Amino acid sequence: MAEPFPLEPSLWAATAPPAPPTPPLAEPVSTDVCIVGAGYAGLSTALHLAERGIKAVVLEAKEPGFGGSGRNGGQVIPGLKFDPDELESMYGPERGPRLVDFVGSTADVVWELIDKHKMDVPNTRTGWLQTAISSQAVGPIEARAAQWQKRGAPVEVLDKKETARHVGHEQYLGAWIDRRAGVVQPLAYARGLARAALAASASVHGDTPATSLVRENGKWIVGTARGATVTADRVVLATNGYTGDLWPHLRQTIIAANSFQVATKPLSDNVRKSILPGGQAASDSRRIGLYYRLDHTGRFLLGGRGTMREPRQVEDWNHIETMMEKMFPQLKGAGIDFRWGGRVAVTRDHLPHLHEPAPGLLIDIGCMGRGVALQSAMGRAMAAYIASGDPMALPLPPGKVKPLPFHGLNKLYFQAFVTWYRFLDRRDANAL
Image 1 (tube, rainbow, N blue to C red):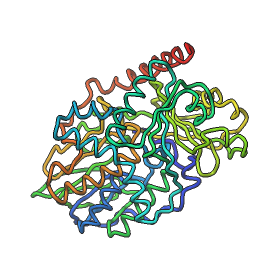
Image 2: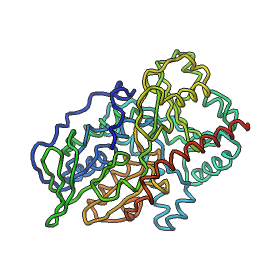
Image 3: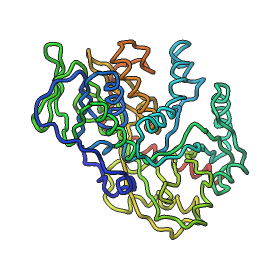
Image 4: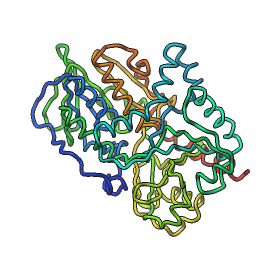
């Protein structure tokens, strides 16, 4: 697999507190649970297991937060791509409402963890805006808000005028605001989770790629590139967009798409106050969505889909920078301080997936733009399941590992769809 774009040039790497020590695994160890992947899901699972007195060892190929957990936009958004009524219809009268309750509370988990463990994480919780770029998007946004309102969520529909006041321009026809949401410095949060897990007596080892996974005599043995092994009763795989071939065909169940971001130089007070003055994060209703916000240093950042290949030159971010100035002309000439990218795991049905393909092996994959909140809560749920054995502790029933047909061609199809959807988005926006 191609090496991801280096973490060092990102805004988050430049502004996060130092990482806690996570030395490579140097000798064989035995543990209750071995977790592969030190992102939000893996670290949250380790933390919650350790708090239950269950010994956990985390293996990370690079350093905690190196993957998507340290590269995302830092938007803490509850829910999933599907609306509550759809989820209840899909999963039935018993599992469906429980899933809706779970995804509706995922953002709460993030702030509970930050507060409980006194994490050094820049954050605000003033809400998230989802905006309508076309008339076709207004109805679904209103329906989505109504469904969450019916369930007691603090959400509100905004008309065109109110949307303009919240966003800072008049290009949208409306929006809804979800006040459960907010933003964090995502790498700082990943490192905060690592510190909390270590303080709770979990073991976290960076620079320790897991290279093999076999079951012998009722135990799992996880081999590493350095030669040391972990023997465990259970294994959790939580590698998402950076999934390799540790378990057969798992990598073929997702498209590991790139998300690119840029961050400006710190803005002047006048410009900063003209964009998202309430401090909300925002995403729009484009088929190929854009997400944007201000960070704690006064920079504006914008993200969206990138090329399927790894970025090679600054021109790979041109489409993001062009859109930034089109949306907010006051940013013209602001200057770009940071450009970075990261992999996200796109599943065939745009839902997170859990798998349990062998006794004692639990797999979590797929974030769908909700990873900060979703995977923090998923880690807590997986720990509860491991501790209790109760399948209802999991928000979703584990399913079979099903590779995407013709996976080798899916990246080409995905890029073709991205190009087509961008054309449709431009057409809809120009029709206003």
